[in-house]
Image: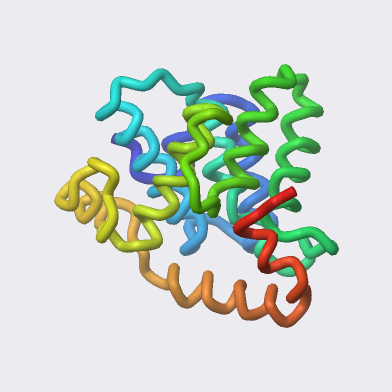
Length: 188
């Protein structure tokens, strides 16, 4: 299985989303990029285990962009998940993605912290929501991916520095735009 973001990308849209994350984060291979790889791989695993058909491009682009707007210089008056959805609209809309495909990608980004299942919005939306939770919880929650498999994935795409990075980004977001934080869990 591919272990790096560069090995995962196949389409121009996927490459563009990865390039945007690298532009925002200041380079390749950082903690957020590895989190994105893990989230994508977990979502793929969950789909495989349930026999679900997914649009790989939607899922990978959403995985790349789901936390991208936490980084400095990306802030607006919206929450970072809303900003991430707008970023996807700008990047992928310019590529001519059809409305339904684009909507599943933006919903996956915007709704990845929802408390309730998001199957009605598309399998990619719910799979990214679950995958993000599996990765953040460190494998305590697996939704059927398997603890051993999740542990092995962490060796392939290490979590080194991830919690510290996310912690600082969330502290900065709370300081710079505190009114937007509740909207992370209840987007527009």
